[in-house]
Length: 392
Image (cartoon, rainbow, N blue to C red; front, side, top):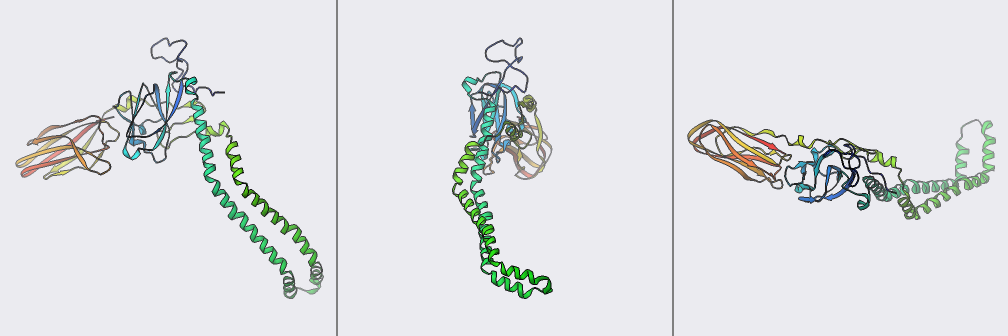
């Protein structure tokens, strides 16, 4: 029995056969979803058609701000940390790019489409995949903890019970000495206790028999029972592994929250949160890389541009001092692994006040950029501001 197809978070859409929508691009009846597990490489290409993309799950140490996705073409990269509940945009191919620090880590993505995935060929729906993920994780936790459970039982049950048995045996073997101590050290009127002590002494054998029958024997039986449980631990684990059957309501609660920040995907019953507007992520952003007076060769601090794929920079010179002063400015990319920088664009031979374009870098392959400069002449001094515009 197959599970029903989850309804679209964006309204009904059209199946591959049947009535076509009355207007182009207007959804009408059925949607399907596909879960794809991935092991990250520096750059990957996934040939899949759809109109909705989201991150379903990922390793705890995976930094989504260092992993990017592009649709249809390997440009206009969008960091996975900015996706939120999902992205709604038509695509026929997905490109995924990961920083070196994230290569080899795993994540699962969810793809939605206007009936472009079929149950007959796909084999499972997104509900089947989520059930399998929850069951597999639960059984893995039981298997991982089996040794710890056995160790706790051994140290907190078997050992105390054997100690109690030894203590009771010692009491039994010293019954006569205990009776003598009690007899000689009780300091109450003999008229009150003499009869009681006589009865205890006279019935010592009976008391010992009662203790033996009602304490020692049950404890030894319990020890045998615990030993039997220990010997069948593998069978017990096998039964638990093969017969755990979580109800759907329990799995729905377990799957209610995926992730830890704004890119979380929430699945509650059959609803998925409204995806973000992809186009809103493409607005340009301006920032200052360096501002100050330079009198000798130097460079700025690193600036994080990991959210962007294109950067354009310029230098504004507001004052010049010295004799025959000349300024050269370079826009550099910084390697994550070593911290070394290499020039990406430059403007040289600056001798006066003005605005000078350094250049534009598309498909920026660096998470950090910086600027450097060289000066020459006698007592050179330049008051400069290096500004940049960046886009996703």
